[in-house]
Amino acid sequence: MTRALAGPGAATVAPRVAFDWRPVVRIGAIGGAVSLYLCLVGIVPVFNQRPLIIGVISLGQTALVLSLFATGFVATRKLTGTAGARFLAGGLAGGIAGAVLSALVLVGSVVPLRNVFLNASPELYDLLTFGLGTSGFWAPLVTGIALGALAGGFSLLRPRLRRSLYVGFLSVVIMGLFAGLIRTPLLSSPLENLARLLFAPEGLTPVGAVITFAVAVALNEYRRTNDLGRRYRAVPSDRRWTVIAPAAVVLSIAVLILPQTLGSFFAQVIAIVALYVMMGLGLNITLGLAGLLDLGFVAFFAVGAYTVGLLTSTGEYGIAQWSFWAAVPFAVFFAMLFGAFLGLPILGIRGDYLAIATMGFGEIIRILAGSDLLKPLLGGPRGITNIPKPFDVPPDHWLAGPNQIYYIALAGAALIAFIAWRLRGSHLGRAWLAIREDEDVAEATGINLVQTKLLAYILGAAFAGLGGAVFAALVGSIFASSIQLIVSINVVALIIVGGMGSIPGVVVGAIFLIGLPELFREFSEYRYLFYGFALIAMMRFRPEGLLPSRVTLRELHVAENEQPPDAAEGALVAQEEAG
Image (cartoon, rainbow, N blue to C red):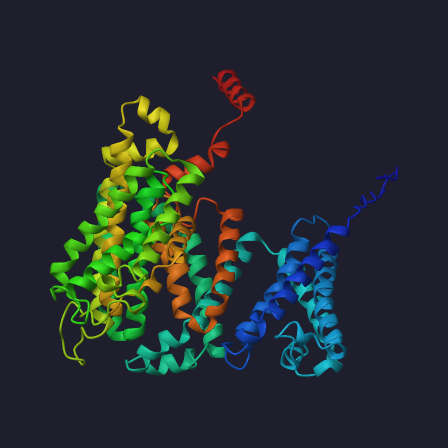
């Protein structure tokens, strides 16, 4: 209770606030379990081989530090007590998480944990104890307390300063991950000395990390101070081209010279991303606009690839030896036929049943492509090989290898994006949206469900067929093993992560879920683990996706945008009284 002293000069005794420390202990235990998981599944020891800041910290150590720091920060996030309480709560939670790692070191020195957990090795214990071995079992505990207390102090900072520090740290991580890709072209340019100052062969130099952090924080503060987004929105819509056009020109030039500066590997990665963008835009029509979940989308991709293979291959199973450009229209056409073939028998199916039916169709195509029944035509498990590139150029030509597919894939993705954008605002696009919301109501308004759904399947299949055609030219062969269910799941996942029904969202989703794993193939065994984390995080914190469409954004946040009836009446009464 609060008690005041009467009389002159009396002091008021501040009320005591009782804290419930049980949530702090629970969060510390959860953080310890997460840190233990990161160690035992191999993320910490495997990522430890990749430096983030050379001679300072590796990716594995960064993952461990983040888990302990995040434990302390989450424990203090909802506390409203004094600064000392926040430091104490953060240190307690971080210490509990660190104690779990200390227990791992102690138990591992007595019990052969490696018989069950392959990553519970002496190398891991040395990493956790900073090279002290099992005798330094106390090191994770002390580290957890220190990082947790630091997180408590971090939670006391102003939100604006915290966001700037977030941006700076994230920039260091990103630049450290891509240091090798950035450093290589800079070494052969006039910026060679700058490249050696900022980047090591893998990771940032300490000086580079400091410069990257400072520049990122300064740019973020400049953006917030000048409110660039508000200033852009204030520009009249008929004059915004004066801002967009220069940026588009710079971006186009950068896209054109990327293969020559970053090499053929980067060009191949971008080409693969563009292929998934094509398929994503196709499924975005079927799923994002019309609301028809198709888990057999890879079948249309396979039809396009096999069509190009059969018509262009110079090998055993080639039937025409046409050029790539002559075969592509037929690949798109046959993919559209298969789209109609799939769409007709399942037009009356909805929901989960539709997903199962389309998945079955995709599996049928995969089994038939690798079966002995179609082996004389499609090659069976041997597949179709010797598929020529679209342009026959010498090996030292600037269009040699995957570079030409890079430009073709980007051009195809841009064309499909333009078509999808025009379709979205058309009468047909609005009909698809109406079907997605309620088929019965859409039919009552005069929309032909059979025709409209069938067009969604046909157009989506056409886009996937074009992607398959470009894939066959990129790889130079097509096998039944390439027709996997996971391809369809990847396409669905990138639409969810990017934003359902959003064309820019498809591009962003493909970059995050396809491009990044391709760039970091040394960590490919953890690809689906990160997929799971990404999808859970998206559903929990941003269910509308990274770049959602306006329609999806309104649907998911309709409760936030609507005023409660009482609040609306109160606002009306207040306006009347003021008037």
